[in-house]
Image (cartoon, rainbow, N blue to C red; front, side, top):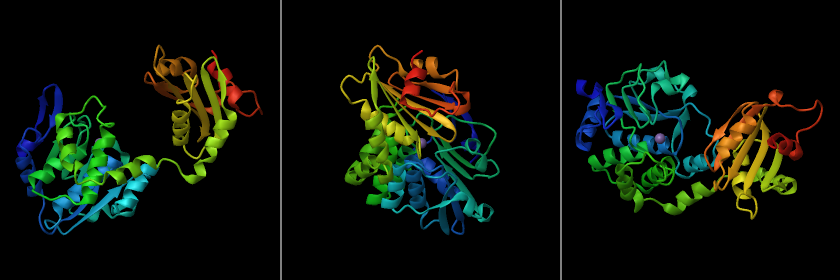
Length: 341
Ligand SMILES: [Mn+2]
C-alpha cells in the first residue's frame, strides 16, 4: 500500500496514488482495504457524479463488507438531482444524522477532505476523486486522477475490472454522472477514458429516464416567474431586461434567462431577482462580438462579485451596496439604469 501514497507528476498533472496502476491492480488495492466485518460509510457532496460513484462503490463492496451507508452533508436543491435520487431510489442519508465515529471504514468519493468543513475532522481510508490534488490529509488508498471528467468514469473501470454486470439503475446513474460532469463531453479536461466508460454504460442505461432528470428543472410553484418575466421584459438597444422580484432560488433566474435568449432581437438578456439579501443578475448573450463576463464585471463589480464567460455571466450584489433611492422598490427599470453605464 505504501506505493499508493506517492505524490507524482504525470504529464504535467499532479497525481496521488495508484493512478498509474492497471484497473485490475487498483481494484485489488481497493479490496485489500476492507474485510467482512467492516461497517462502511461513503461520504459524498451529493451531485450526479458523486451519487452514481457512491452507488458503484456500494455495489463493489456488496458481499465483501458488513454494511455500506452513503452520507452527504449538503442539501440537494437542484430538482434534476432530486429526481435522480427519487427515480433511482438511491439510499442516502444526511451526514449530520449519522454516527460517523461508529463506522470502521470511511470512503470519500468525488471530493477531498479539504473541500468541506464537515470532512476535516474525519479520517478517510479510501479517497477516489478527479479534482486537483490537495495536501494536508492521508488515506490508505488514494486514486485521484484530475485528467478525468467524471469520477463515475473511474468507477466504471473498477466495476469492469471486478466483472460486475451492471443493473439498469446503476448504469443509468453512471451514464448521467458522466454526462453531467463532462458537460455532455464539451468540457476541456475530458479524457478518452470518459468516452470509453460512457460507451460501456450506454446500452444498459435507461436514456429516457436520463432525459426525465435533465428536463425536470422547474417546480410547478416556480412557473409564476415566467409570468412575471413575460410581463416585465423590456427591450432597449438589443438588451432584454426583466426583474423577477424575490425568488425562491437563483436557479429560476438562469432558467428564465436561458428561455429569453432564444427570442429574436434579444442579443443580450439580463434577468435579475432578489435572494438572501442580494441582487442576483444572470446575463446571457450570443457571444458574437460580445463578452457577457467582461460586461458583467465592468457594470456590476463595483457593487459585488461579477464575472463569467463569453456567453454567460452572473453578478451577485448585496442590496445595501447598490445605489438605490431609499424606500423605492427595485424594478426592471432600476435594473436597466444600473446596467446602462
Ligand atoms: Mn465530479
